[in-house]
Length: 208
Image (spheres, rainbow, N blue to C red):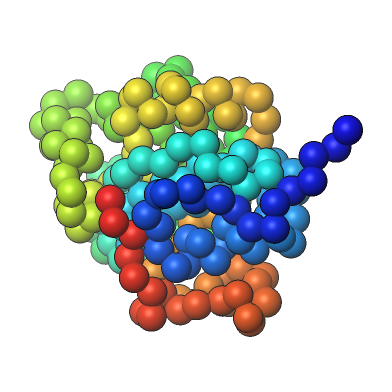
């Protein structure tokens, strides 16, 4: 027997911002997630929420996101060397994406969010060895969302979270990834009815 989706996504007792709740509610109610699991990335809070296909919260975690504030990746950035990406261009783009499992150049599993812009969800340890890797681990443990703005644009999660939740989800199927805007209104990024939209400026950021 088919399961009847809930009227809205359930965050349980998890703290989440108004934009995150609005997008989750709309994704389930409108069927925008296409009966797939879905992820919401709240850049303002530097936090990720993973839902099952029916809108039940599987897990959440703090994340590292792009250093620069903005919602649109610079043109052609996916074809550049990392050393050629200026700090102001290190943006995690906002939008609706369909994430697919893949591998990085070292053969490690990642989730491609926007392949053309080289944006992925990956383990925080999957960076070149050295100070950068150590600094990212330190930043990931910070309670301040601003400290977790450090990546080149990719979404970094702990190795434990990736292996326990991200990898199994994307091994089973693709999943929709909603990355919330931080400089634009939700209605300018997602096809949501006006009654469900809230502006980023008016919303309280999620507590990590």
